[in-house]
Length: 365
Ligand SMILES: *Cc1c(COP(=O)(O)O)cnc(C)c1O
Image (cartoon, rainbow, N blue to C red; front, side):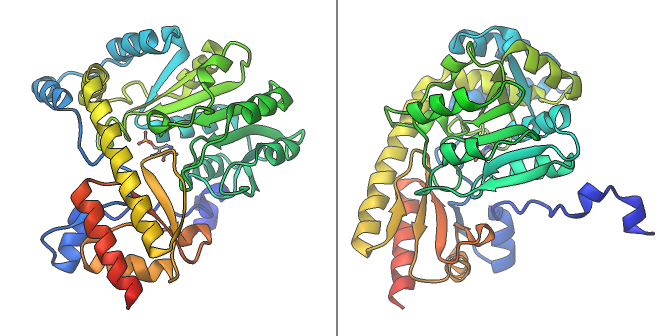
């Protein structure tokens, strides 16, 4: 069998995504009973109890195909966001919408602009379709929208802006975004990935929904995987002009969002007290971690999300391994070319404490 003859050239260079290590795998491999995961920016409080209850009822009916039009969730969200139903698209996680965007818009050789240090799925989606990736370095750990606009060429087809950015936790402000949008031709799709939208507290953060009326080339992505605590269910959505949505609908699988996910997402939207509580925990955890990092003399990037990028006086891969032995999973950022930076998800108070205690003893060694 000849790989070169069999497989599309674009696929040969793609490396499979390496997710945060699953808890069960770490328990199995290291023979540990207790493992905490601060690696994938999941909500440590879990899903909304209301969602859990509704999903339990839904499971009895899973012999029936899900609603391919996601009718009830669509209605609920369109009212909440103040958009029309046909301005929404649902995906098996927003990850799937990234791939749909690439399938619908990216031709071989089209240029796709993204930050040098950002969510790796943009690169993946672009590569599948044979697009050319153009990376623009961050400035102070933040998207450099001015430099990104200057990178636009006649071949540019799409631009990804992760706001707030994963893995740095920084957000770009209203003025920069407005300035940027004015410079982008309408034949280029601008994707605002707002997976951490609900966590943002910066008053200067743009309400990108307001720009949909003036810019037809814009799509905003949000998800139920982060603050809504439904990462295991896979449901995310895109908000855009109805024309963009109609093109994405052409590449969407008919039943891409499963029935339990639809019900869980709907119930989660009704349980706003769970969101408030999650935000409270996140704020307290953030303040605690900032204080401890300060005491340890560690540099970190102030975050608009539920994770923090921290710089250590030690190899990140080594710290990752040593924490893992103690049953604490964090994310080493060595795959981004950083040697000493890690990303840690803000967890429950006792988990944050365990992490700090273990980190302290590692750094004192
Ligand atoms: C987690 C994450 C997503 C993926 O969300 P899913 O809806 O679970 O696919 C998308 N974008 C960013 C920046 C993320 O961190």
